[in-house]
Each structure stands twice: as C-alpha cells, then as structure tokens.
Length: 221
Image (cartoon, rainbow, N blue to C red):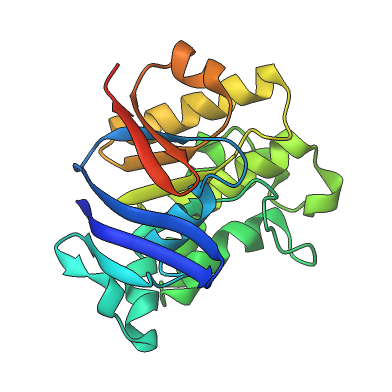
C-alpha cells in the first residue's frame, strides 16, 4: 500500500527533515508515527499526500510512484486519502454540513449522494444534529470529530492524522481513537502521528519512531 525507498527531504542546505527513510506499510495496517517535536512526523505525512515532494528517493502509494506525479495528478491521489489535522482546518464561514460535503462536491458527486454520505459520516461521529452549525459554535472535540467525518466521507484507502488529539482532553481523545479504530476495521490504512505514548500503550499497534529525521524504531505490538 505505502512504500518508501531511501526518502530524504531537505528544506534547505542546513534543514534536514527526513533522511534515508525506507519502509513499507501494508493495506489495512494501523501505524503510529512517534517522535519528539521536530522529529519529522509532519513532513512524513505531508509527503504521503503530496503536499511536499522528496528531495531524494521514491514514494509508492497503491503501486504508483507519487514522487513523480505532476500537479494535475495530485487531486486524484488525494481522493484516496483522508487527512485530519491538529488544528482542524475547518472552513469557518461554512456550516458543518458544508465542511463535510466539500470533499465530495470537489469529486463531482451528485447532490443526493452527497447528502446521504454526509449524513452518514456525521452520524458515525455522533454529530448529525449539528449539521447546520458553524465551527465557531462547536467545542474543540466536536470540531475534531467534524474534521474526521470530512476525512472519512470519501471512503479513503488511507487516513493520515497529525497529532489529532494534541489539544483535547483524555475523554475526547479516547472517543476519537474509537473512530480511527472503526475506520481501520473497515479496511482503511491508518497512520497516526503523535507524541502521546499513552495512546499506543492503551491501543497497541505498530510504532514507527523518528528522531531528527531518521527512522530509529519500527516495533510491532
């Protein structure tokens, strides 16, 4: 599903974000990406949805070499990938419904299909009663669940989550982990970047550990 071969990412001559990453993640795996701040976790995820290109090396997703993709090919890649950010990145001027519908509308889905899938996604995260609210009216935990619904509504092959519980309390974090587990149980490959070691102790899965851009650990539970 995901393969990296000697991937290096430099932002400048003195800014090395990732160095010589070689690894494979199989379809349907749930993988934590851990490491201190600045270890390269966010850069790693950004490479996978082509927000960044590697300085050197190859990245294959679903047997396609995305490191060679041209700009017009990237939207097709992102149709297969859901992304959840720590700061939610919701559109503040739009309703909850409109935020979740946006990804489907960008794919040209018909209105009735959009409506059905958005309601199902919001029901999955327990917020179908909030669909006409705006993000500013919601708690941080609710906003994160909306962001997860937006990522899952496209039925992604891969779900990437960058510190999704970083600003949330323990109870909300556990609720969000259950959503990720359910998505994984349906076959979605999940990569979750976190510095919270309690998560992979409580929900054991494969753990990739980065340090100063290098992969220093790859442990199975």
